[in-house]
Length: 81
Figure 1 (cartoon, rainbow, N blue to C red):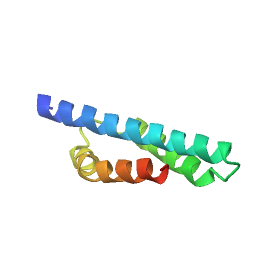
Figure 2: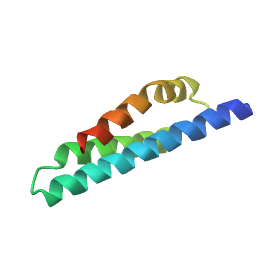
Figure 3: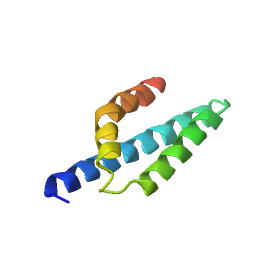
Figure 4: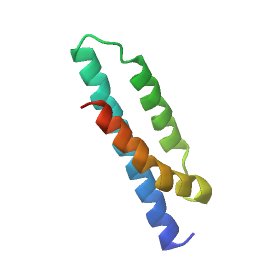
């Protein structure tokens, strides 16, 4: 594994962490408004599982996360506005 692989892996894990935090914010907002937060809970649980299963050797998954998750993060953050 190269330093670049490690850097990409850390960036992917950080992206997933940011998504988990954004989902948690949506859960808090929904609960404060008396709404249903189950969809956000399920998304957060899936992300936690994905982060724990991700390995630096999973180059394709890491690349996929690095490519597609920034848009997902924007979507989740914008959902709270």
